[in-house]
Image (tube, rainbow, N blue to C red; front, side, top):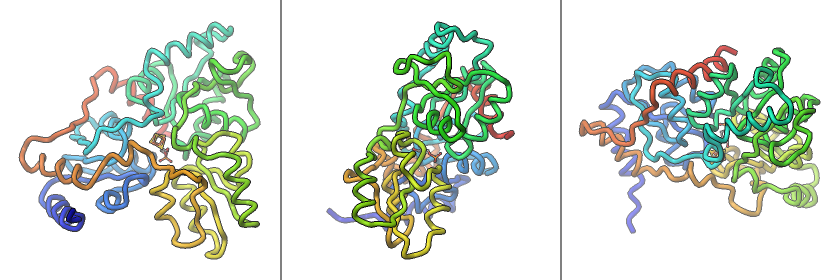
Length: 332
Ligand code: 13P
Ligand code: SF4
């Protein structure tokens, strides 16, 4: 079959010139899609930079909650997604499961007015809206520690959704107690009560992988994303969000070996030598990888044809409260 990658790239560039459109791409996108991005970054950077952009159309190459967040923050923008692919973790919670989590905390003896919810940005707008209504806010893996520190100043118990690992890792980092709803008994004693969601990609890294790389390459550094299990983060030399990992790894001396526990596409383009994927399985995010160059081209073409496809809509009440939760994070 003929490879039409370069042809598609040229057509995409042509359409971008012609239309009032900004292409946004997360670091985990396929290389050829990432290369087409006008704005690239991790989830926090994308939310901030896209907000400041003034094109009529945003074509977002990422996962559903990311495009939704742009729409929530800037309703005047028309947000299209070449593939409306939903992050596996975001899919693990909805507003009903959120209510059940609050109820589980109440059952453990914690009054609702003493619960402050925080949702990782990897959640859909309905969950963000619930969090906003209860006085809580959003965080990303870059600012989770700061957001939790600020939230704790209110003297309340934190309900952290949906990623149990990020919640537990931040609690460990801060010397706080955490408990996972449905798994741990000690909900009432915990400072941070976590929902039991997780990232299917970051669950792939194991302590055996770390032991293997340390044995094989003495002196190697292990750098991982905080969506990895606490048992992995404990044994790593560095734990950080996507952009923190990039800064850490690119600043290492050229001959310093590093094994990285995060998504494959990012690791693969990080550093040409001495960088390893911390897994025997290729840790590709299936939903991030759904977006192809062809999808991107078709989406841009639909704008040119006056019939935009895959447009993101959020109903007004959900949008308003999700915005409150996102704005609280932005203000910090
Ligand atoms: P970042 O906030 O680091 O971009 O992470 C988003 C994500 O989905 C990680 O799996
Ligand atoms: Fe979601 Fe995990 Fe993919 Fe990130 S890597 S988008 S958390 S499934």
